[in-house]
Length: 322
Image 1 (tube, rainbow, N blue to C red):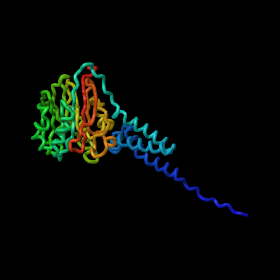
Image 2: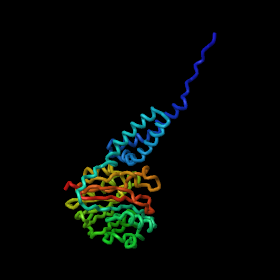
Image 3: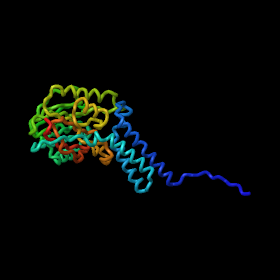
Image 4: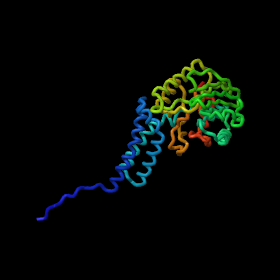
C-alpha cells in the first residue's frame, strides 16, 4: 500500500509578482484616501500633498500589469487610479472660467528663485522667454535685487520688499505697466501691489507661505492664509495671488483659500517642485489663484532659473462673470 504525501502548495512566480504589484499600490492608495478624505489634520494633510506623484506611480504600475496580463493587479491599480483621480480633480481640473470675447490677455510669470541662487543669466533668460507682462519673484537673493534693471528690462515698474522668509532675500512684483504698493497684513509672507493692466486694476499678491508641518509649527500656514484674507478686505479690484504656497491646491491650505477667500486655482499639473525630478513626479506648490472675474487662458512651466522650483507662466483675461 502506497502512502500519499501532501506537499505544501507554493505560490507560483505569477502569483508572487501579482502580490508584489498589489502591495506596491498601497502607498498610492493611502495618499489618495488621505487627499479624498478632506481631513485637515497635519498627518493626513502631509500625505495629501503627494497626490500627483502617487498618480504617476499608479499609472506606471497599471501599464506594467496590463502588459504582463496580471489582471488582478491591474484591477486593483484601476481602482486606486480612480481614487486618486477623484482626490486630484480639484487640483488638476479646476474651473477656468469663461473668457470675455476680445478681452486682452495678461501674461503672469511666477518664480521662487531660491535664496542661494546666483544664476542671473538663467533667471533673465527664463523671464524673457515667457514674454511676461507681470512678474512675481519670491525668495529673490539680495544680490539679484541690485540687478533688477538687467534681470527685468521689460518690467520697469516694480515693488520690492526685502527681509523675506530667510531675512536675506526679497519679494518683487514687476510690470510693464504702472504699479503701486498697497498695505498688506501678515508680515513678509505676502506683499501686495495694484497693477494698472489693460484689464483694469489688478491687485497682485506675491505669497510665500511657511513650510508645512513637521518643518514649521502646525498653524503657521493656516494663520498666514487668514492674514491674506484680512488683506483682501475691502478690495474691489480683480485679484491674483501667486507664489510658493508650500501646499497643493487640493489639500488643506488650498481648500482654505478656495472656501474662505473665494479664489480659484490654476491647474496644478505638471508639478513645480522639486526641479530635479521630472515634472510629472513633482508637486505643484507654486500656485496661481485668481478672483472669479478673471478667466484662465493657459498655464505652463517656464524654463529653469537655477532654482529648485520651476517657474509658472499663467495667461489671464477678463471673465464673462463680472
